[in-house]
Amino acid sequence: MSLIAESDERSQKHDLEQLLSAVMPFAEQMLMKYGEFIPYGSTVNGDGKIAAVGGDTGDQHPKSQETIDLLRGAFRRQAQAGTIVACALVYDIRTIPPGQSKKTDAVAVNLDHRGGMSIIVIYPYSIENKKVALGKSWAVKGEGKIFSSGSQAH
Image (cartoon, rainbow, N blue to C red; front, side, top):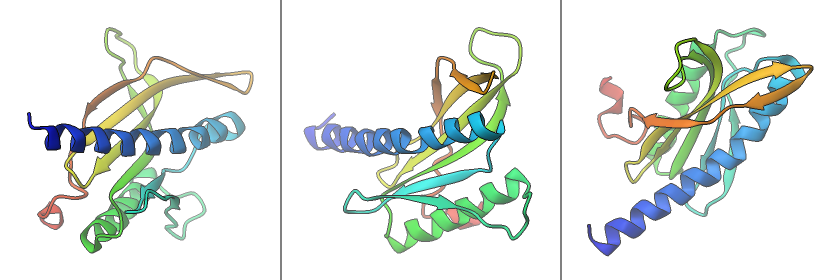
């Protein structure tokens, strides 16, 4: 791998780690307070400034998928306009952690970078006595559709 590609991958990873650090405290706060949260996100612009993003469907109790679709659409438009370099979409899922057989609640953070890096970091959690306990996280490859040129076709 060339030095340029390595440094580019390192800078993408850095941007995505910054986003991850920015979005997780809010998920934990909402889980502690309400036991759930409406999907939300964050973006990073060319200057490295992180902005929190919420999706208002007009419904007081929106369906998670509607909010996720709304946020993904907004991220795609911003990516096409070149106003963001990375984005994070945070939502609640039920999944089976590696090496386990039972489903658990988890926070999924879908991270995308214009350089092509796309990962989903998953944090299993449990809530006891208004305290959130995060389990060991893991990552899977993301779909990479936010910054792809053919994203509207999907």
